Length: 476
Ligand code: NAP
Image (cartoon, rainbow, N blue to C red; front, side, top):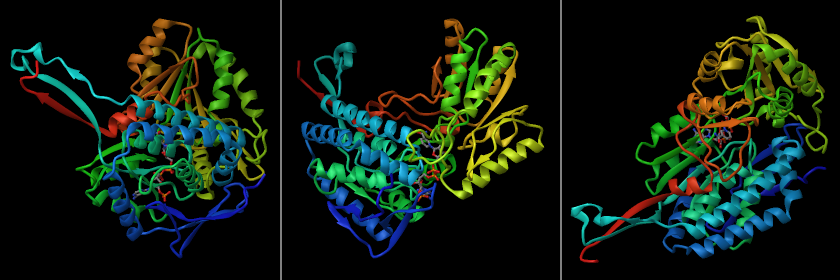
């Protein structure tokens, strides 16, 4: 299976625009050309903001926004093969995972349509105080304005969907800048929105130098909100530079999970073996740090390591492949160097190595909290296994990084699960499932360096709308 290399212009003001300059997209697995994308600069970015501004002057009623979102969901489902093949080709994501991403995007659009249909303010009980007696009060939820959206390479379809579908549900026009390594899925999604009847200017897609396009989004006052998913450094810097805008950040993690001795330890091992390594660990909530009650370590490793070694490493286009390449040679070198550094600091390798030029799933033991493979985000097929003797120790280890996106615990005790929910300093705590779990309607987002918001259409639409209070005097 290979997606024929194609040329993709950019969508601005409802037109497919060529700029005379092209940017290549190549397969992270084979290096083959996947596509050539028109390259935008600051001028086209400003035209895109003009188009979004123009579009928002004629608001789309909620029923039309919902109909378009439903149509996109339908088109995505109808064209699942093409969508999954595009993700696989440009990101090197195995087809198994690419199909799941395509299916999840359908649900992101379906939920966004439902939110568009039910978006409303609330009644205020004005006569609850003497000051309000005789008055009628309610709120309206109004679109915040133009949204600048910046997305990462690792979920090139569904994380774009998580920005542009809620924006349309909220009634906001968007200027989108997808990751340079994976812009094809975003442009395919734009094509589907166009086909679904989205009027000109509501979605504009720019590919090009990140800082140039980013600067326009930061500096243009008409862009009222920036929604960013990506690495912590870039995200917090954008927020600092765009002090007068709303800037919502979905950033990285070093995902911990605890395995208690009263859990179904073999079930935990099976789930974690799969979720530490799907898409070669390049998910923001890929399992990276596994903490196991000391008395359960032998049982855990006895089940975990063979399952990790059985994962099929190879061509992402092969339907049987579990683990493909990481996104580029630079990241492969960085990940291998972090593993080597951990080894020199005393870590032992329980599984790992290379196969046909790809990093094999790597499991490290005897690690310590200051090693990069523990305290930084690896974003590659590497996890660590560490024993603990008490829950206090396990919570301290899990909380001991700058990150706080999502964490997990396997336990047979409801009390322990609820204690973990309180004591793990993360945006989400998952019990008896790998913490890589995400359903698209749930509020998903981090604390500490991992972010400042929750994404998921109902929550994103709240961020993308403003509450307007209306008070009517002499109304009752
Ligand atoms: P990245 O390097 O931070 O890039 C993310 C996006 O920011 C890309 O579109 C990139 O454009 C753009 N960008 C880079 N510099 C910029 C600047 N100065 N101004 C404006 N935009 C700029 O992240 P990545 O490597 O693509 O993605 C991996 C990271 O994303 C990991 O840390 C992962 O944990 C995080 N992530 C978080 C979530 C979540 O929901 N919390 C989900 C997925 C991924 P170019 O591609 O053109 O450089």
